[in-house]
Length: 194
Image 1 (cartoon, helix red, strand yellow):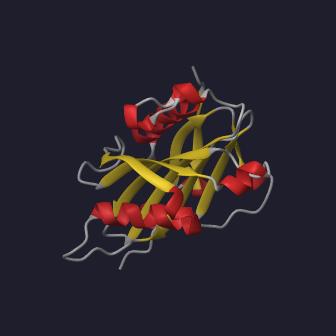
Image 2: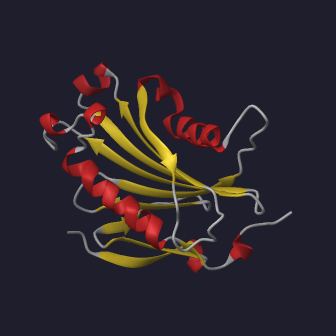
């Protein structure tokens, strides 16, 4: 079972418990001010926190559409090789109870030529959480990215259509559950209110 540690985000304006074996990427390279990125020291999984401008939804769109919009931003040009398996509402235990939040699980398959050249994993599992802060005109997006390189997982244990996630995604689901229970905004002045 993973050990967790309290981790400050954005200079302590937010906190969350993350696996103790994840390293802050800003210790290694520059990270944009609106992001916090953590990488598994002994694997390939990353956890990314993004503070983004709120995606506005109108009469024909919903918060679920905003969630899909953020997923397509993450996937960029590879959206056609992605599939969403599960999408649902979420509760973040340490945020006000009326705070809208959503999760989804998607997979993105690498192009066959990139896999053949050894440049990409077979697929990447993406556990996305969206927290909608309407008053602050902000979306907080948490993305747990779980690459599955050949030889690092058992393909017989992974079948999202049947609810089989395998060892790597099962661990990531536990990380997400811990984030949902421990993510806290301590300084709301971080956000510019209008």
